[in-house]
Length: 66
Image (tube, rainbow, N blue to C red; front, side):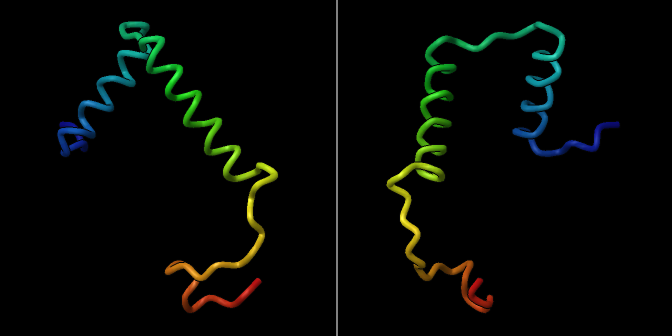
């Protein structure tokens, strides 16, 4: 009996299982989009344009300033 219950979870598990057994592929367009998204995230997190100025966010409320 599977512990997975959500349909999306089941599909993801099946896809990863197929990928591990060389039974699936990813299109070049999808690979390019993934690479572009990762590059954008890296630039946002570590790029020179990164703002070091503190901004209040909901996740900051109730926490001490570091």
